[in-house]
Amino acid sequence: MTFDVTIPVLNEEATLKQQVGILHRFLTENYPDRSQWKIIIADNGSTDRTRELAKELETIYPEVRLLTVPKKGVGLALKHSWGRSEADIVGYMDLDLATDLRHFPEAYSALADQGCDFVYATRLHPRSRVIGRTLKREISSRGFNWLLKAYLGVKFSDGMCGFKFLKREAYLKLSDRGAQNDGWFFSTELLITAEWLKLKVFELPVTWTDDAASSKVRIIPLAKRYWQDMKAIKKKR
Image (cartoon, rainbow, N blue to C red):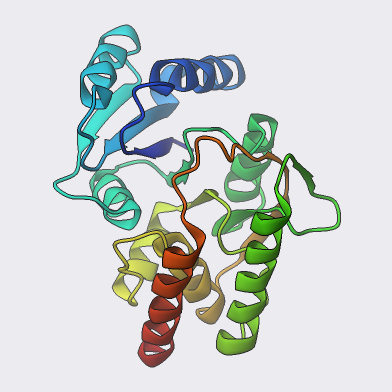
């Protein structure tokens, strides 16, 4: 099955070339037929040299594409990328590659060989390994996922991990049924909707390394937005 790996970016000039190079080497080694895959750099509002560097990467690697999104929003970036994709599988990972890349073949196999519709990485499974995470971020993550279960009645363990892949036909179904958030909540909204529609969802325990120094996440403002988003999706149901 063909697949597109989307990396949403915002002002990532410091690490873009290095991280995309790491991902490209990994995919080349594991999927040597380069016609099978693409890396989509979805830039949504960078004001530094991110777009310039992404264009350079396009010339270095034929499998890399730059997608310019008109305004900020992780969900908006993913929707623009996946809505234009012709691949069998679409998905995304964060540029910091916090989720160990060795888990990608597991995700691919679940979709291509095991009949799953959706794969999500979890840091909260007993077999998962989390490295370098601060107590503050650990408590906030567990609290958010507890709230998802209590308020929305979902059963998945980790809605926020930035490593999710799904069949494009499943994405189109989820999009049609209301997964439309433009912000960070979009990937969680997809997972919620997939569970409610009883799609075959695969939970993937992962090794995950926190990069708190480069994180753009601000916990309190994000928590407020997420609470509003949770109330909105509950109404949609």
